Image (cartoon, rainbow, N blue to C red; front, top):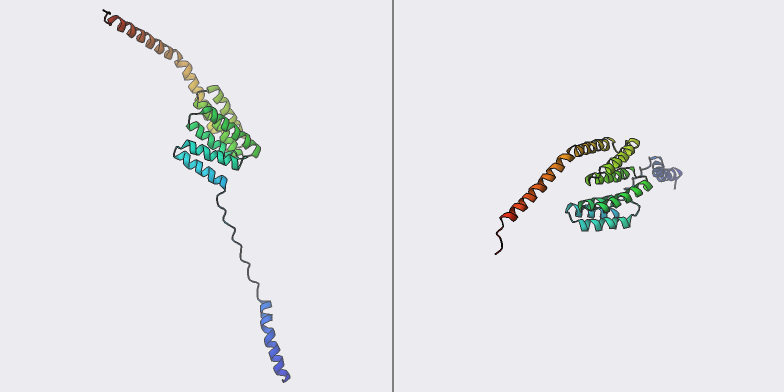
Length: 204
């Protein structure tokens, strides 16, 4: 084969490779991160919330206890169980739930959950009319809020303290009035009983 023809053929084989080497590299395709579905812990919390919305408190408590088993270090299920206990008017159990949530929140440095637990204790004391305990508990919430302004506000606990103090003052002012009303009711009841006895027919 003549030399010029061999040279042309060699160039024809080289050109595609040279062009490929000089072409910019294709941009890598970003890998799509796998979609993370709800964990069993999340599912238990959701079941509990749905049951609570239906006022099925037994099912709600069962679901939240299951969440505790799945993540024993989380304060969230204990906060939810406290809400269920309050809905059942079981203040003692609710208080225990809040205290356990508070302990776990402190251990986990979960400031938002810590604030919720502290507020729950204060609300519970106030709802029971335990004014002194409620003022103290709201004071703790206010102190925590002062140190963690990005998490919660001190305005609410301080407003609750003022409201409770006004309530205490009114209770003291109206205590004599209530006593007089109660005494009048007792006298009226005794008079009605005596009148009923006097008008009863004598036995034959």
